[in-house]
Length: 274
Image 1 (cartoon, rainbow, N blue to C red):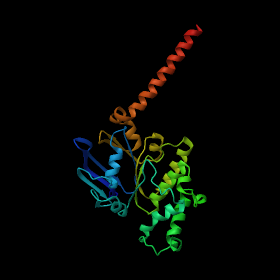
Image 2: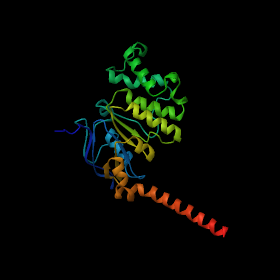
Image 3: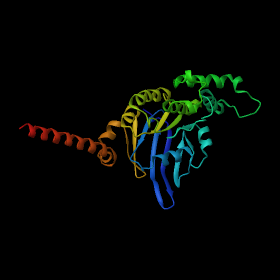
Image 4: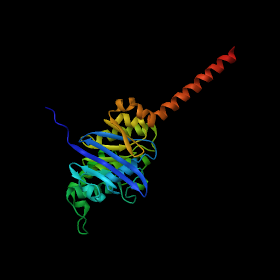
């Protein structure tokens, strides 16, 4: 008899309102351990708000959020992080005045049991240095270890932020639009990087690039007006009529309109030939 995989992240009828405005309206979601889930939806659907609720940046108005069997709704972000959840942001949150290596060393200290103290030298923390260098190699920045984060390229900064997210060995990772602002070749390399560094972890990501979504996700959750209207495998979500109408249909309609314009242009050109 098969047993269900344990849940890494679970939302139970979560609501969030600001004043009289409901942003998240009874959202429930169950993400199994080791799954890669993409959260998609039109602008204003509530994706960033949902990430803020999960990571503790704001508390839900009602409902429950569970992380690896522990209830976390209402907890502080640093407490949730220590329970095993790490998050990246749409805009990079790095120590711009620190080097690549120092950003990563800061990220590994707590997970190795170290607390900040004035009389301990980072250079003597061999396990922290080894872990930081291991992550630095994973994200392809081992030749840039002494470069300040502020002097990295945009793609390198995004890679470093993912490195900071995984450095503490959190089993659940939230990535907020990890490939935003990247060109096609950079995006392709970044998708492969995400696959490699999140292997064996649970991933929940917000992403607008459908190529990235279908290339990475085991399942897709579609959020529209604060409610999840579909949660299934990529192929089933793509074929879901509600999703096509509410979200993917916009892209389909644009493609159909473009095809119609091209066809009309060809007909007009043929008429001129006659």
